[in-house]
Image 1 (spheres, rainbow, N blue to C red):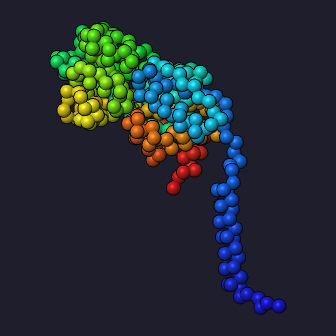
Image 2 (image 1 turned 90 degrees about the vertical axis):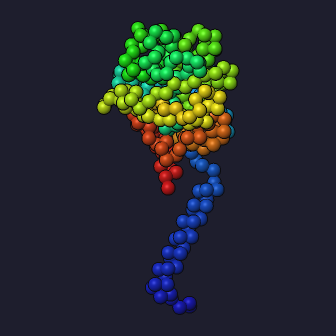
Length: 332
C-alpha cells in the first residue's frame, strides 16, 4: 500500500486537479459549437437618404451581417432621416435604425407612438452640423440667412430638427424669416450649384460624400457655428442638452475654401431597436457593429469613431437586454 499523502500535500493535489478540470472545461467550451441557436429570419434596417452617411453605413453593415449572421436576411429601407426612422422602429415597420440623440429625446418628450418601447444598442459616431454656402456668399453667420432660400432638410429628418433650432437660436423664425426648402442631402448640392438655394444645412458624419463631391465641383465654404449658438441651444432638462460644441478639422474637406478648423455643433448617433426585438439577435447585431468598425471605417470614416468604451452610453434610451448581454461578455 502506498503511504498516505500528508494533509497539505493532499490539499494541493486536489486543488491542482480542480484547476486542471476547470481548464479542460474552458477548452471544451471554446472548441465546441455554441448551443445558442444562430438567429434566422429577416430584419429591416431603416437608413437615410440615398447619398447620406446613414445609407452608406447601412449598406456596409449589411455586408458584415451577411458574414456574421448568415441565416438573417437584411432589407435596407431609405428614409428622410432620424425622426422618420424612429417612427418606423416604434411602429414595428423596421427592426433597427440609426437616429440622433436629440431626435430620440424629442420623440420621447412628445409622447409619440411606441416611444416607451424604444431601446438603445450602441452609441455610434457624432453628427456634425454643416452650413454650406458658395465661397463668394455674403453669409457669414446663421443670422445672415434672413430672407434667404435655405435647404433645411426633409420633414422627417434630424437635419430639419437641428436646423430649425439653430435658426431660432440665432433669433430667426424658421418659417417666416427664411425661405425654407424641404429637401435632403441627395438634392441639396445640385440645387446650390444651380443657384436654386442660397445655403443648406446638413448634419452628418465627417466627411459626408455629397458635401465633399460638391466642393470638388464648385467653390464652397462652411459657415462657423460658434459656441454662442450652442449656449443658446442648451436648456437644462430639455432635449437640446444633447448638443455640444465641436470643431470640424481643417482636413475634413480638402477642397472647401476654409483653410482652418471650423467651429460647429455635434450630436451623437444611436443604434436603436425595440424592447420586443429578440435578445440573441440584438446581442449578435451589436457584436457585429463593434466588430466591423475598422472595415466599415475604411469607407465611412465616421464609423472609425465607434468605440466599445463609449458604445454602452445610449442616453436617453435604456440599453436593450441583448446589447447589455454583449457588453457584459466583453467587459475586461
